[in-house]
Image (tube, rainbow, N blue to C red; front, side, top):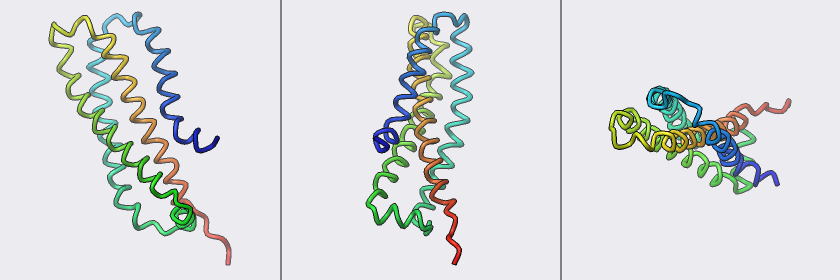
Length: 150
Protein backbone atom coordinates (compact mmCIF):
# COMPACT_ATOMS: atom_id res chain seq x y z
CA UNK A 1 0.00 0.00 0.00
CA UNK A 2 2.84 2.40 0.82
CA UNK A 3 4.52 1.90 -2.57
CA UNK A 4 1.21 2.56 -4.32
CA UNK A 5 0.66 5.67 -2.19
CA UNK A 6 4.18 6.96 -2.86
CA UNK A 7 3.93 6.37 -6.60
CA UNK A 8 0.46 7.77 -7.20
CA UNK A 9 0.07 10.60 -4.67
CA UNK A 10 1.03 13.34 -7.17
CA UNK A 11 -1.45 11.99 -9.71
CA UNK A 12 -4.28 11.63 -7.17
CA UNK A 13 -3.73 15.16 -5.83
CA UNK A 14 -3.65 16.53 -9.38
CA UNK A 15 -6.86 14.78 -10.41
CA UNK A 16 -8.75 15.94 -7.30
CA UNK A 17 -7.62 19.57 -7.53
CA UNK A 18 -8.23 19.65 -11.30
CA UNK A 19 -11.76 18.32 -10.84
CA UNK A 20 -12.49 21.06 -8.32
CA UNK A 21 -10.89 23.68 -10.55
CA UNK A 22 -12.85 22.47 -13.56
CA UNK A 23 -16.07 22.88 -11.61
CA UNK A 24 -15.32 26.52 -10.72
CA UNK A 25 -13.39 27.70 -13.80
CA UNK A 26 -16.51 29.25 -15.33
CA UNK A 27 -16.60 31.83 -12.52
CA UNK A 28 -13.28 33.38 -13.57
CA UNK A 29 -14.14 36.60 -15.36
CA UNK A 30 -10.83 37.59 -16.98
CA UNK A 31 -9.39 34.18 -17.85
CA UNK A 32 -6.90 35.63 -20.33
CA UNK A 33 -5.02 37.66 -17.71
CA UNK A 34 -5.21 34.78 -15.22
CA UNK A 35 -3.60 32.44 -17.76
CA UNK A 36 -0.88 34.97 -18.55
CA UNK A 37 -0.10 35.55 -14.85
CA UNK A 38 -0.14 31.83 -14.08
CA UNK A 39 2.11 31.07 -17.04
CA UNK A 40 4.56 33.74 -15.93
CA UNK A 41 4.60 32.48 -12.34
CA UNK A 42 4.91 28.85 -13.34
CA UNK A 43 7.76 29.78 -15.68
CA UNK A 44 9.67 31.11 -12.70
CA UNK A 45 8.71 28.33 -10.30
CA UNK A 46 9.33 25.45 -12.70
CA UNK A 47 12.63 27.01 -13.76
CA UNK A 48 13.82 27.08 -10.16
CA UNK A 49 12.59 23.53 -9.55
CA UNK A 50 14.33 22.34 -12.71
CA UNK A 51 17.62 23.87 -11.56
CA UNK A 52 17.20 22.27 -8.15
CA UNK A 53 16.46 18.85 -9.65
CA UNK A 54 19.39 19.05 -12.04
CA UNK A 55 21.64 19.85 -9.09
CA UNK A 56 20.28 16.83 -7.26
CA UNK A 57 21.02 14.71 -10.34
CA UNK A 58 24.71 15.37 -9.85
CA UNK A 59 24.47 14.68 -6.14
CA UNK A 60 22.67 11.34 -6.50
CA UNK A 61 25.86 9.42 -7.23
CA UNK A 62 27.90 10.98 -4.43
CA UNK A 63 25.54 10.62 -1.48
CA UNK A 64 26.90 7.95 0.82
CA UNK A 65 24.52 8.08 3.76
CA UNK A 66 23.38 4.96 5.55
CA UNK A 67 19.86 5.38 4.17
CA UNK A 68 21.10 5.80 0.58
CA UNK A 69 23.19 2.64 0.96
CA UNK A 70 20.07 0.84 2.16
CA UNK A 71 18.10 2.13 -0.85
CA UNK A 72 20.82 0.94 -3.24
CA UNK A 73 21.13 -2.45 -1.55
CA UNK A 74 17.34 -2.93 -1.53
CA UNK A 75 17.15 -2.28 -5.28
CA UNK A 76 14.99 0.85 -4.97
CA UNK A 77 17.60 3.18 -6.44
CA UNK A 78 16.17 2.77 -9.96
CA UNK A 79 12.76 3.81 -8.66
CA UNK A 80 14.22 6.98 -7.15
CA UNK A 81 16.01 7.79 -10.40
CA UNK A 82 12.73 7.26 -12.25
CA UNK A 83 11.01 9.73 -9.90
CA UNK A 84 13.79 12.24 -10.53
CA UNK A 85 13.64 11.87 -14.31
CA UNK A 86 9.87 12.12 -14.33
CA UNK A 87 9.99 15.32 -12.25
CA UNK A 88 12.62 16.81 -14.59
CA UNK A 89 10.67 15.91 -17.75
CA UNK A 90 7.42 17.35 -16.47
CA UNK A 91 9.19 20.52 -15.34
CA UNK A 92 10.57 20.95 -18.85
CA UNK A 93 7.13 20.35 -20.37
CA UNK A 94 5.59 22.87 -17.96
CA UNK A 95 8.26 25.42 -18.89
CA UNK A 96 7.58 24.99 -22.60
CA UNK A 97 3.81 25.23 -22.07
CA UNK A 98 4.32 28.35 -19.94
CA UNK A 99 6.17 30.03 -22.78
CA UNK A 100 3.44 29.06 -25.24
CA UNK A 101 0.61 30.18 -22.95
CA UNK A 102 2.10 33.62 -22.51
CA UNK A 103 1.41 34.16 -26.24
CA UNK A 104 -1.78 32.13 -26.85
CA UNK A 105 -4.33 34.35 -25.05
CA UNK A 106 -3.47 37.09 -27.55
CA UNK A 107 -4.53 34.92 -30.51
CA UNK A 108 -8.26 35.37 -31.20
CA UNK A 109 -8.66 31.82 -32.53
CA UNK A 110 -8.01 30.32 -29.09
CA UNK A 111 -10.45 32.57 -27.21
CA UNK A 112 -13.14 29.88 -27.10
CA UNK A 113 -10.71 27.36 -25.61
CA UNK A 114 -9.16 29.46 -22.85
CA UNK A 115 -11.07 27.81 -19.99
CA UNK A 116 -10.06 24.33 -21.12
CA UNK A 117 -6.46 25.42 -21.64
CA UNK A 118 -6.43 26.96 -18.17
CA UNK A 119 -7.63 23.73 -16.55
CA UNK A 120 -5.20 21.57 -18.56
CA UNK A 121 -2.27 23.88 -17.86
CA UNK A 122 -3.16 24.05 -14.17
CA UNK A 123 -3.19 20.26 -14.02
CA UNK A 124 0.19 20.05 -15.76
CA UNK A 125 1.83 22.58 -13.45
CA UNK A 126 0.30 21.02 -10.35
CA UNK A 127 1.45 17.56 -11.43
CA UNK A 128 4.94 18.85 -12.18
CA UNK A 129 5.20 20.55 -8.80
CA UNK A 130 3.79 17.48 -7.03
CA UNK A 131 6.39 15.24 -8.67
CA UNK A 132 9.17 17.65 -7.72
CA UNK A 133 7.99 17.97 -4.13
CA UNK A 134 7.61 14.20 -3.74
CA UNK A 135 11.14 13.58 -4.97
CA UNK A 136 12.61 16.48 -2.97
CA UNK A 137 11.06 15.34 0.31
CA UNK A 138 12.28 11.80 -0.25
CA UNK A 139 15.78 12.91 -1.21
CA UNK A 140 16.08 15.27 1.75
CA UNK A 141 15.15 12.38 4.03
CA UNK A 142 17.97 10.37 2.47
CA UNK A 143 20.42 13.22 3.02
CA UNK A 144 19.31 13.94 6.56
CA UNK A 145 20.43 10.58 7.86
CA UNK A 146 21.40 10.84 11.50
CA UNK A 147 24.46 8.73 12.02
CA UNK A 148 24.11 6.33 14.91
CA UNK A 149 26.29 7.01 17.95
CA UNK A 150 29.38 4.86 17.97
